[in-house]
Image (cartoon, rainbow, N blue to C red; front, side):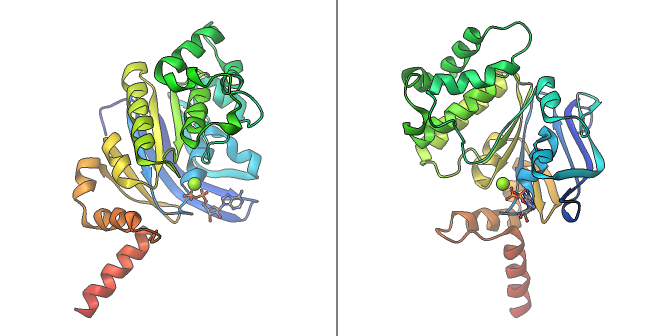
Amino acid sequence: MSGQESILKISSVEVKYHEVILVLKGVSIEVPKGDIVALLGANGAGKSTTLKAVSGLLKHEDGEVTDGSIEFMGEHIHKMSAEKIAKKGIVQVIEGRRVFEHLTVEQNLKVGAHLRGGGKSVKAGLEMVYHYFPRLREKRNEIAGFVSGGEQQMTVVGRALMTNPKLILLDEPSMGLAPLLIHEIFNIITRLNREENISILLVEQNVKLALNVAPHAYVLENGRIVMDDTSEKLRENPDIKDFYLGLTDVGGRKSFRDVKHYKRRKRWLT
Ligand SMILES: Nc1ncnc2c1ncn2[C@@H]1O[C@H](COP(=O)(O)OP(=O)(O)O)[C@@H](O)[C@H]1O
Ligand SMILES: [Mg+2]
């Protein structure tokens, strides 16, 4: 990725929870400006931790970046508060689409608006969100706890948009959603990237989907990046192929490591 200016540069980052639990063991990831980069990996690999290290949310969970550095547009941010980081234009959409259930869809969106800088009004923000998510305009006065899972996911992405971000950290947006909705949401994410020039670091367990929207991807395993390449190359990689075939196996969420171990075993047996 050399030659391209990066908006986010994570360099050899180590993260500990509660001062003792070492979860990230030297993670380096670059997101080129205006690009989408995918971060793949099995459950527990440290994907969400990586995003929280960038957004500063780690501190709320007694986690800390204990080594390495994180640069956003050339500035070190790993020691800043979550609020300061947010004001710089980074927003994290946490996994599990957490809406404020008792508020309406529109009230949920307005929650994101207090961080909105650059003189743009709340109204303009809402118009932008409704432009990309026409469904949310229809549902704007409904209680967020009662709209569908897909609409809740749209609401949290919309809320992130209201902050007027330069970089969105998106944690497993497809989780638990029906294929059609996933398709719809990913179309919108791609458009936000292209039309609004928002850079995206996308965490996904749905590898096939992630490799379709992101030109470049990293594979995280047990707190370490074990692979990074263009999505085109990764799609052809036999380990990756097995990995996402394993994931699509109903009920059989294999880890990347399991697949590799399995392959090693198989090779040894034959
Ligand atoms: N607040 C926390 N305190 C202690 N350990 C944590 C905390 N959050 C996550 N972990 C641990 O860190 C590891 C990585 O978690 P996470 O980043 O959520 O992985 P992923 O998002 O890839 O599933 C897991 O072993 C998890 O148990
Ligand atoms: Mg996670």
